[in-house]
Image 1 (cartoon, rainbow, N blue to C red):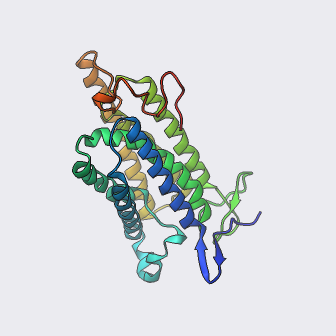
Image 2: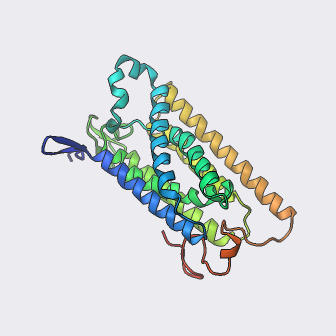
Image 3: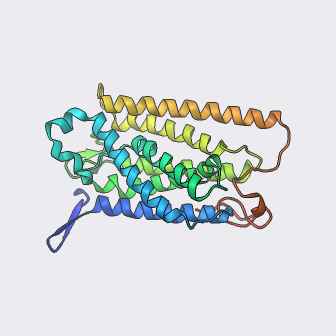
Length: 284
């Protein structure tokens, strides 16, 4: 089986499928986040400008952290720093730059949406978009595979010799599983405290990133790989601690009104946070 084409020509232009995949992913995330905001009774007029800034800062942060983690490679060939179509976007770098940008815009343009409620609403969006992005990004780029393998599921990737573990596909499956778990939490843990969905996302995604790097992507002794594994474990531990704290505090305060991230004035006229009226099943 030949590697998946990573580029094609339109006249003199070279179009990289990696870039197309990222564009589709960002569009999907925008539309889905807009839907969840509207379903929860919040205005969305501010979202377009905010999202453009979030996309820009996320890409810059993702690339910057990747370059810093692989500084020796880019010091030897600085021209590769801007060659994003070859891959090299750190998910942690994207979050470190993108999330604060989003919080700043929310505070200024949509003050009725608190930071924690906003993060609870956007967390499933991030996981769904991460799954889509894995299939339409790294799966279609140079050097997109993991370790060499002779297993039946091995695939060939441009720039790599032999069959490789199809890590992007495995990562997409991980992300969609986490996304499904978050929807179940939203649907069945109706009296959850604010921030619980975010904490669950931190724990699940942090563990997934650690295992992915450890099993399929990591290189022994490579600084970038070690940092990803440490960050994944730290995120997993932090998520567990926050979930336990929030759940314990909610139990200590006794029964409370369901906190599903919706505005109080939308409580009686909206379905659950997935956008469907009760008692329909969660919808992606």
